[in-house]
Length: 153
Image 1: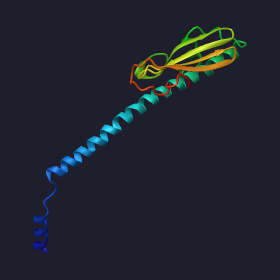
Image 2: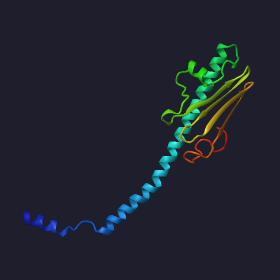
Image 3: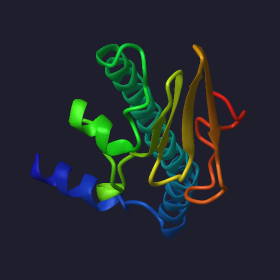
Image 4: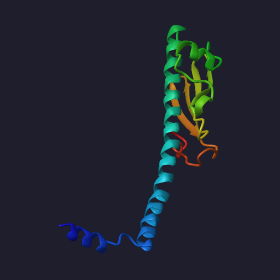
């Protein structure tokens, strides 16, 4: 039995250098395909966070209007929204989306949320009850338009 195992161990030679290089090359090609895909998904997630923040700001503006007889004019900046909704972020800490603009008038408002990583800005405008959603991508950040490819969302 021991003689059989010894003979088997001598006949196995392992992998050649060429075979190992081919495996490493295949792994490198797969990594080159996967890494950019993952980075694009991260930019899209940051843009989705900014969209969510804009919608939260929109809801907060409507709450403020309800408390002020339908007028949005008490809002002159993001600080008034933070006073009502504590989850609204107004600074660029930790590369999170932030509310960059919030203004109101008697009959409408504008809120702008910006994705810190991609610098895409998502705007919601209420003009006399007509709501429009637009976005702008300055071409900085990841270079991927993310959720702002068509200029609207």
